Image (cartoon, rainbow, N blue to C red; front, side, top):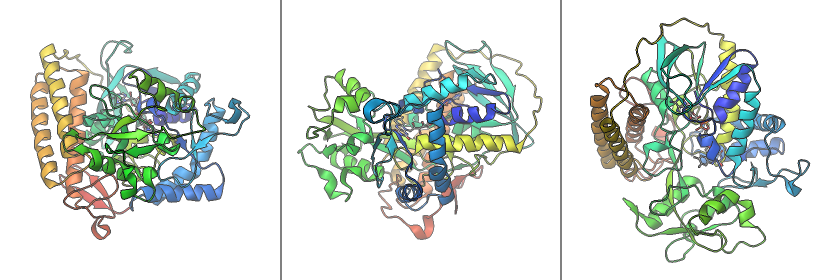
Length: 528
Ligand SMILES: Cc1cc2nc3c(=O)[nH]c(=O)nc-3n(C[C@H](O)[C@H](O)[C@H](O)COP(=O)(O)OP(=O)(O)OC[C@H]3O[C@@H](n4cnc5c(N)ncnc54)[C@H](O)[C@@H]3O)c2cc1C
């Protein structure tokens, strides 16, 4: 389930041994992976570089990175990236020739320049393009585009099949289908759409997390949502991401008085960990309900680097708004970006339910702890996508026959659709205010009340027995919102991306642990 970096990497591995169906809600290119700009972090300089990458990852994660997961990430990363290059991915090189040295940049909280990039700021699109092209030549991989996984079928504590519904112009077949599988990998990406302000595309509605939890799989670390500090902040314009690589190349942050304020917050200034920078921007510029005083990215002082050539995608987008990286102050604000939590898996991608596997942003191995190190997630997709596929193969589960679907429900009416859109917008706004960058018990309880209201209204609509993509997405968002709110309420400390105004300190004695959600309504805390 999913055709981002994790799903595609897994598919390639699986296709060496059997038939693979890759299901994706929109076209193959529409994923968080496609929009990744800055690059992919990888330690290419041998053992010392690998151990520094490990330490950077562990330190960004603020005390709860699962070290074994981070070790797997950084030590297997170089092989996975080399493989990707062999399969056709093109990263920027010196002299623009295939023989030139790979160019590397630095991003926040990395101790050295180890981020590979492609066409300047189009790294994700290149990774997606090369993996899709490579996967397409495998006869055993089939793609179902514009097809949404809407249900999981379990039998005897094991996932044995999924329900799929065509949702768009290129849908395969016109009726919902039940497909049995020896093993199901959820690689459905993040859930940024649970917040009103997000860098994530429309497909990122947390469907995978909701389906797994609905089938009884455990979730972990759901309180940790990374807010990217620098999304474009202009009224009526989407929260377009202004990559951390801009600060890696020397961009300053300035408040409305023109001050470089990061010196008041962290010795690493603009390259401090993301949560620190995001909260600093919030404090300098944002009121509770939105941008009160503007905060800017400033690259006007940068010399000796052609910003338009280095960041062609960002430059072109800004140009449509009559903004120029080299000439103008660019208004920014934080936006929901990456979910550190997700479906709890072991290091081989196994979820807590038989037959179910998860990899990539949807999964939680503990590799990012409380805060992801910049550019570690594309690498995570490669490393853990491959690992999950390997365990799907070695677990050797059998194919069970299941009954097919016997009816095709009607589509929700236009009125119903409008109601669903309204409920989604209200939930997103409530999540931004109540469970955003700064939270406390009162806001989180308010968020839970809003989510309960949304849930009840959605149940009312669902009782009509009609279906729609947006209704299914709304239900997924509501489930994800509940998991975030519940986990954030239980963690009465501040750590990484989770900041509680009422518990502003890190509390290692009680919380150097991972939160886990099971069917039990109480959040449990575990040591990994
Ligand atoms: C703007 C932006 C910039 C970023 N920049 C970087 C960066 O520079 N470096 C970095 O390392 N990371 C970056 N990230 C994060 C990174 O891109 C993602 O974490 C990573 O690509 C996730 O990959 P994935 O394979 O887990 O999921 P995704 O790439 O999000 O893929 C999810 C797939 O699941 C499918 N799907 C979802 N629900 C369903 C359903 N119900 N049925 C069927 N299919 C479904 C989607 O259609 C999609 O194909 C960025 C993210 C964004 C949004």
